[in-house]
Length: 280
Image 1 (cartoon, helix red, strand yellow):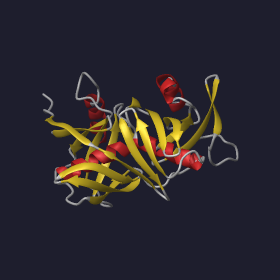
Image 2 (tube, one colour):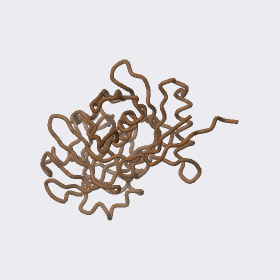
Image 3 (cartoon, helix red, strand yellow):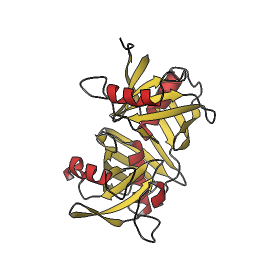
Image 4 (cartoon, rainbow, N blue to C red):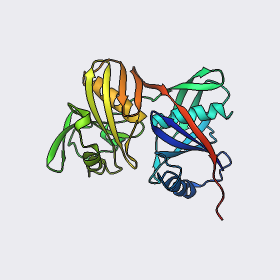
């Protein structure tokens, strides 16, 4: 079984062509846990499977390193799109990808036959609590700049779905936040029955943010595409930024445009390709 190892600003993935459907759900979950373990295996933030689609040009499935399946991943779909074009699964620079969070449009910037950057239409933010899902709130259907008690500390949070759930927390200095301490508490908070991605955001200026993300099922990653989009969408809704924003994540820079939809752009890279031997 052949695979590619890819990364989008340090958010790294193993990609396997599963159009022959050799990997079932349980196989994919177990394989993700096995292959994504760092130091003992290939190592990655997740496993991406290329699948046939009856609704779009191709289908993407995402399995986190803990084996759970995710609805959507911004950096993952950018890596996935480069793979599909460069191996010939897709032969056009603009196409549609089916995901668990709906069909996403992607556009490739090419240099010869190589994909340099990928832009993704990430869709529209869903601000309703039920979309995450998120319990509580009384008669409030949204959680915009609301207090959330985490242990003995109260955080002001804004929650939304970008196809997967995010809890956005604005801070003065994102570098000083103990992400690995606060992140797991918020991820597993009782108000999020299906857990949540936790996005810590520092506003630098109207067109610039700095972001760190604790991803459910993964921990802190060097970049998170949906988390980056959630950060910009929340900041824009609260009047903290304009509609075109550069976002600094640990792995580099991403660009987000907010209109009726949210668009994510950034570089992607193939690290290497390999071959997985069969079980003895």
